Image (cartoon, helix red, strand yellow):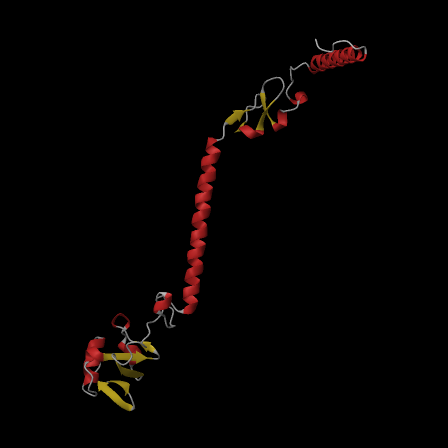
Length: 209
């Protein structure tokens, strides 16, 4: 024998029936209709502050429990749905998309996190595409292939990695002594030319060549 305590307004009833006679919420409402003048379609059953739904109906949990019966029309604006987050027992609201306040905030934070992760992935993909566009060069000494901005050209005209860039590290064939000598000679010629032009100007001559 199953006993359920029914509260309707100020009235209280004990609903008794044989085990197995009630298989769904509509049959329970039909049995309640024998006690109160409210048809099943207009009944809303509430147990421990939660609306009993067809997909959550569990008669075993209602045995010897108190359920409240209310008119659907009377609480049309007040009836709340359980938060649609799994395993959450708080009330949800239409303003928060069916979530309770806590789950609503958590859901917003999750959406923001997913959005940031999406942007990071897109940024990474763009960076990878840019890297692919960078020219790959090869060190003439060790053969290492690296991005062009880490492979530099020596004065001998060959490309080297930073490890072998200095002339002593790759047996550089560039004649630095000859190059320095030529620069000194050019500087000396320029200085002599300036002195010559200066003396011509002081003597009233034409400084133009």
